[in-house]
Image (cartoon, rainbow, N blue to C red; front, side, top):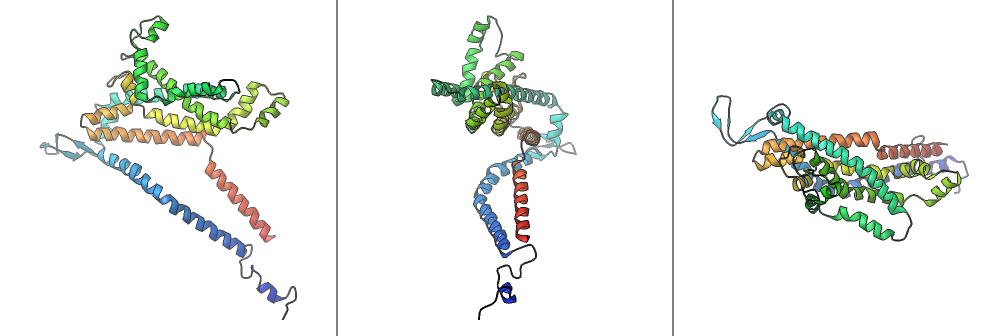
Length: 343
């Protein structure tokens, strides 16, 4: 028996029969596909998350637990001598901020912040300049790119020994300046030696990432800007810098996190236990080398929190909320699709 168009039987046999108002069977299927994709993504990411939990999560928790204990001889509440590990609570943190180790902590904290801010600012300016040079079309560009990236490829310990030879009393730095400056002694010149060596080594890293961002910009954009009468300066501020901002922010963030953990370059170039260049990482290493593991773990925990706060503020203040923007666009697309189905 044939059913005439518009007959109730034809409506009952349609795919959308029984569906709630504004939602079709196709919509229900799409929702199931999304849930299945999410379950598959969670299953595929589970090995990586497990490795991260073992490699990062467990050491962080173990370090925080260690910071709550003190090792060695001490006195209990009754005045008796107690040996071995004992629970100290927040005593290690109190000693860092207000106790006998407060002066060393604030000195190392200031040095770490100074090195981070100074080196990252200089590296950003020099790295962007390097990227602009490497992006130009000229003869011998491959050789220039290779020579610019050489300092970044040198191990930090080797770089420290090289600059130690340059900054010694009869080295090349004093010969060029025609001054007798004690670069490797404890003082402000030692800070400048660290800044120069660090900027020389890691500026190519920022230049490399910015160069990758520059190569993603179509040349038609610059041609259109030149037709509109934009000069090189306007092209840089209105086109180049906004379009390479994502790559530049990633490079700067990585360099900030790396500079906050600075240890090997000051230790090789100047030496350990030098107040002018002592960083938080060096302070934690010194405590651990003297078997004060609780105090060392407390320093490491404070440094971890400092890095986490800096990274969070950096992303919130300067970085784009890519995930949130993508979700808002996805919600808008879904609402538009629902309106079309309803109509």
